[in-house]
Length: 382
Image 1 (tube, rainbow, N blue to C red):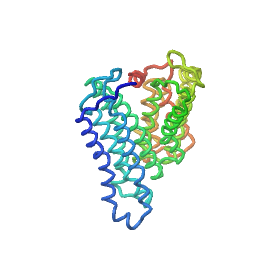
Image 2 (image 1 turned 90 degrees about the vertical axis):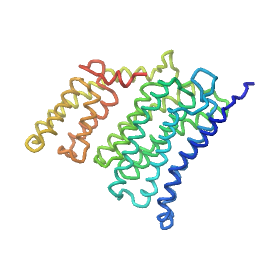
Image 3 (image 1 turned 90 degrees about the horizontal axis):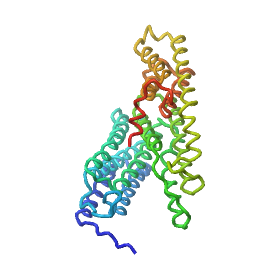
Image 4 (image 1 turned 120 degrees about the vertical axis):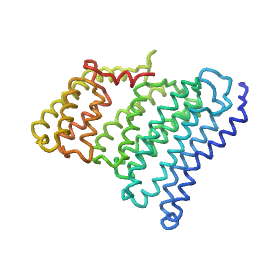
């Protein structure tokens, strides 16, 4: 029988401080909205997600506290949480704070003040950007721990769920997108049930593309929370972005259950077929669609006279995407131009097709035959 690990007292004290940090934004929400809660009791339901996040993260911190050691080593257990873990916990606290918008949306819907209309998007984009910092600090300090890995995963999942709820409540994403925010929790519940029933649970090594897809979800929800995009374009982007993520969870579940076999490189037959399509057929089709749509937009829309910069930017993005030059970046620029509330192109069939192809190209990249694709090296770096 393994000897239980001894957790340093200082680490336990820091865990209690972290509990206060996590619950603080939730208590602040009660204090700020208390007069409105007394007038509108239904608003209290909006407090539940923030409370659930605080308890979930604190529970994970407490349960995995003895794992505050380097990955691959059992000892020593670090006596402090470290800078990287504190940044992760502050991100989680910000997620609890972001959930504070939900009581107001229950009462007022999308009719919020100007400051509150911008606040959720700014907060969540800040949370997402901070996600790039904690891992980098952990690597630089050689403090990559199992505890930090668990906290990072849980904070990301909680943030995506709360941000998705806020975007849906504000009418900026379709309700079906809630499947993205919830997908992680049935997955880990299923694994827990299999373990309790002594059923086999296969190892699930990380996949770089899964991390990339999750990052795209965070970017989409963060931008959707900003009041600068037309809902029809956001709905189209949500449907396009959520598809590979949900398919990925289905794939991972079949691997965990042993129904889908992976080779030494963690590639399943499904992965190999999808990879072949993503390298050739799909990117080429998307690039041709964008190029053709760019020509049609230039021919049919007399935008040059009133909006020459918009049209020049649109045409340049379509050309570069067709050539496979910085495809993901120009596809992002194209979708931002078309989906913006200030766009002169309007909600037309051509603009929707171009937008959809651009959103899909962000996910696939421009494929094997590309003029220049520097994003691939950045996205797939370890």
